[in-house]
View 1: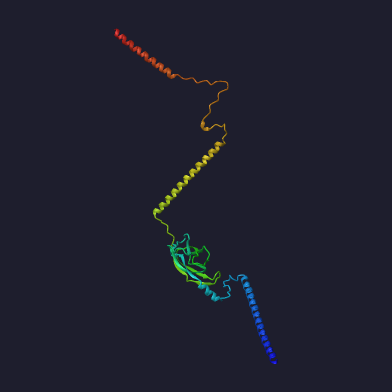
View 2: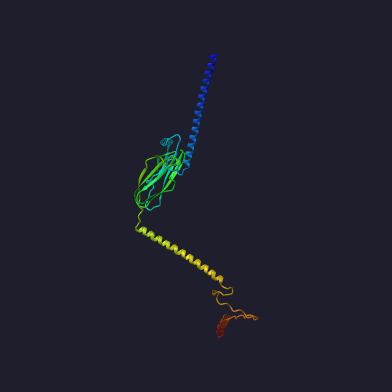
Amino acid sequence: MVGLRAWATRRRSSVLLVLDVLGGASWVALGLSLALVWGSFVGFVTRSEEADRPGGAAMGTAPPSNRFSYPEEIERERRHLFDVPVVHTNPRALGLVADAPPRRFRVEIPGARAASGPGESQAVASAGTQIGVKLHCSGTGVRCTPLSSERQSVLSRKDVAVWLWEVRAERAGAFSVALTMTSYLRDTDTVLVERPPLIWTVDAAAPPAADDDWLSWARDVWRQITMAITGLGGLAVSLSAIAAVIAMVIRRRLPAGEPDDDAGPAAPAPEAGRRPRPRPVRRVQRVRSRLHRTSRGARARQSSGSSTGAISS
């Protein structure tokens, strides 16, 4: 009986020991769970405050990462880049002339389109992120004016991006042109890859000299004469049109009963109640014709009488 009680006591002690161990483990697990939840909450609040801070993600620093450090993230982004062809204008094919209209310099990532054409060259850029392209012109009297955004996103091999500049030479001589292509980390100022710049030396020609021979002089004189004749003809046409308009206005302003100067003096109006007398017709010609016929008859009769007397004798 005593042995049975001792065995029961030992059994109860072992069960209580096991329960104590399990209870402690549960409390430890509960504490660890609470610690993890609190750490996650604090990390979330910290990230939110940094993201809401003005200029937090746009000041040139990489956004924080939970899994990678800053060098690891830079290396990881570089591994994701890929090479794409770049087609650009050959600066030596621009044909720059001093004091001439500017020429267009074009840089294009054509994507899946055709390759370069005449007057163009090819290069290679690292894509998969934002790409910045700059054209630097150094020299006296040369200007490179950008016409497009400096940075554009090229995220796949099929993306197309175009950069444009206007290049103008104000003086004749040699100057240098440098083309730089840079790949950035997302939309930050952190540089992932920047290839060596492409540099050219370009000569701007002087404007063509004026031709002073007699042929050009004669051509200029003839041009001036034709311009003068054309101007006089236009002036004459304008004056005639103005004179016609003035005459039309004057005729419209004349009263209806006023006689015209070109029509001559008007005939006097006949008096009322009397008929106009017809003018006598002169018959001078008829009288002369009758006298002429009478003289001819007298001559005929005289000649006939003389001839009869001669016969009778």
